Image (cartoon, rainbow, N blue to C red; front, side, top):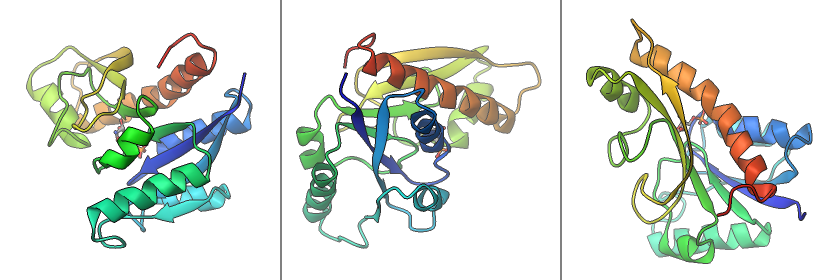
Length: 199
Ligand code: GRF
């Protein structure tokens, strides 16, 4: 089976990206981190990419004010680095039409809730978990889905449920869900490369 090359998009912590990089390094995953793109030059994700010696690019609407040019350079970088699968791991921007078209069906996003619930515009970071708790949900979860032009919208390819505990705070829930995300993302990628999940 061909070793798939991964292109990461991240905006902040990059802990999901790190979990996947670690799994590649320990051969739990037969994949390779080929490139990291971040819109945020101060992100921990960029530091992680540099520490791992992964080619890393800071690209956003300041570096490329014309959105078509930004989309084009992002697509070009992914092609140059021979990316097979694009991983959105905490990326806070929409993907442009050129990239979406070139990598159709090959872009995955992780979301810390049971989509279609608690997804879309405004549902990011702690706001997702605050809403779950305010609505007295007894369970939440993690969703990995294909990416289209809308936030948190494409076809769900894998989902796990996570119980909401008594006396849970948005912060405690966020922390627990994130721990599940790390393992779940790696498991899902392993199933994709083994052909157990078709994308
Ligand atoms: C995760 O909760 C992910 O589901 C969401 O953004 C967060 C990113 O965390 N899309 P990290 O940058 O991977 O630490």
